[in-house]
Length: 421
Image (tube, rainbow, N blue to C red; front, side, top):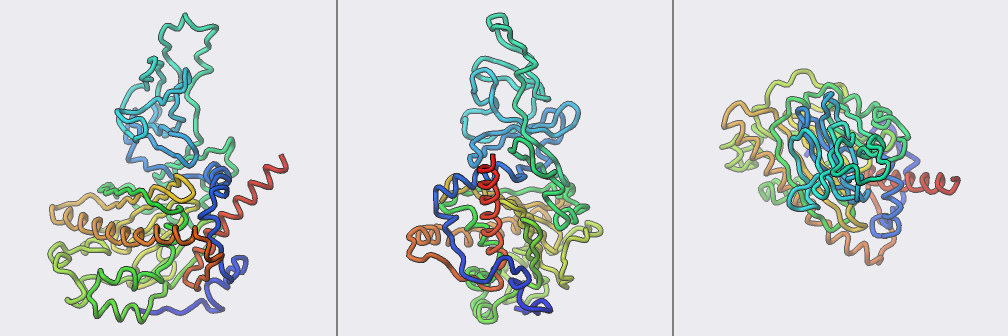
């Protein structure tokens, strides 16, 4: 495994002196009281990605999103004017959940002209206006214009739909994202419509799983079984260092070199990879997607492997050098549980072979994700023992240090502002 030089002056961590170099505490991942504050301080104030515009392709298209971390369910819909809007999924009459199918707690999607409550048939149009009340004359001075759906702040960047649950967002979405993220504008997200998704309930704090994907120090060890023994042993001994880390505002980036899978020695590839011409790094025959945006591959690696952009608080966009991308979401459900969602995006396949190549890449990455998740319950249970109070991090784990520092800063800022009020 190739090693790349450190920055010209010092280590990566030393470039961010505000983070320090001492041991870090994981109390923020095991304390129920911290989690309750974190829900308000972070998840009710930050912009949260809840999907993409391809999920609402035409007028009346909608999907629901269950967000236990902010104690609500929302409807995301394409309105009659073509806008993407979001509403709390609650009827204004008696508080019933407005949109659901057979199971009230399960997410759903579809196309409709209006939303009708299952309880008493109140109706709302796509703009959220209350349009019909059953036996309206039975009510007292009812002004329907005052009882539309409760809106949620909603904005779209490059096809990604974001919502914000603050009474008034502290920043517009693009200001929140900042240049490091907005410099990804122009990537052909709209061409990546071949989509594979997996979802898992994880018995660990959401930050611990984010930590697992913020460093590659673990890769030669944890993923050793994915490669031939001789190669895995050599890789573990050599280690691996990513050539570029960056922190900007609340967000983070790690960029790595790559390999051209078809140039690897035969004994380093699996037979199925040769048959399907695909694997972990994606299909070997990538489609021409045009010029890439300036925000990608900041280290100018050749060959380039991937860029993992960690958008605070819980969203990851991971770009692969072979012309595809994936996203991760980590949705907290308690101080020590969360829902993990992984979604893989490719261009539409042109042939059956391309479809099979995409499926193999998606399944391969799912296997790696499961390996990362496999350590989390063991980590959570032992950190909760409080046998140790803090943990040492190496230079390659600088993004982990930043996530926990940033979360603490949002909590402290919220507590300060709340106290002032």
